[in-house]
Amino acid sequence: MEGGASGRLPPRLRRGLLLLAALAPASVEPYNLTYNSTVPTWGAPYAKTPQFALPPSAPIYQGDCPAKCSGHGTCVGGRCVCFAGYTGAACSELLPGGCGHKDSCSLHGSCMLGAGGRKACVCYPGFAGANCSMVACPHECSGNGKCLPSGKCECDAQHTGSDCSFKACPNACSAHGYCDIVSGACSCHQGYEGEDCATKKCPGGCSKHGACTNGTCSCEAGWLGPTCSQRACTDECSFRGTCVNGTCVCEAGFKGDACEKRLCPNDCSAHGACVHGSCECLDGWGSDDCSVRLALTLSLSLSLTLTLTP
Image 1 (cartoon, one colour):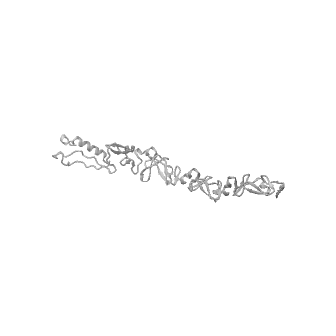
Image 2 (cartoon, one colour):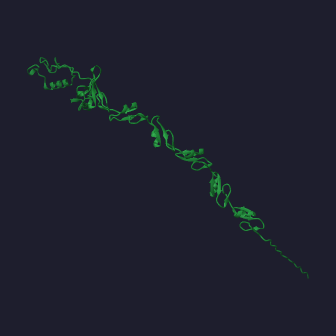
Image 3 (cartoon, helix red, strand yellow):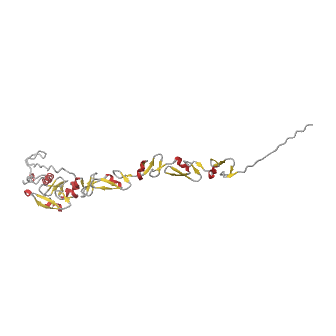
């Protein structure tokens, strides 16, 4: 360096040049940090001012360095100065043919020599990546999902399982069936049906005489019962009997197809007509049930009329 006060750089410019020199690639030759003292004015171009070129992968950041240089570099002025074997704005990329800092493979693998003498990491089980810094997902999620940084698989909608190798069933069979992980089809529990086993069956299929709604039969006209298997009776047996498969079994005192007729005592003993539950007996018969023969009673009346003449 040139002697004398006139040959020294101003302190502010010198600090800036030292910082740029620290960020320059290792292949850049050292620069002579002097300037031509014969240049008369400070603002004129310097004959010996070095020209620095920053790596294209190292953009200028303000404040802290990105990702704290991933633990593979030093933060200088908001930019990462990567350790040997690493590159990138955050020192997160492994240089080709390397095993990372001190050939450590992030302490999750072994550094091996490959073809052409190039080094490469062979990761221990459970780790992945060029420098073995990533947690590996089982079977790389079988190609049916995304591997999360935690090492767990996030499966797509059609697959399930820790490694996304199983087929998923629609709606997980609605918790009413068994999922066949090979075919992805549901085998429904008893009482349920449908692609996802979400539909509740009706007993007996409503005997084909009604509609099933959430497990309950709505019977067609002329049919009744929980399974719509019983024929309905006329007028519901007038509420005076029980319907048995379309036939009314009337209560005591009633008769008719719909139990609409009231019975007379002893059916009027065949000696009268039953009218609204009361017997109208034939001549010569009496009592409530027309069972009593009446005695023949003759009433004779003699009427004499005398006519007196003077």
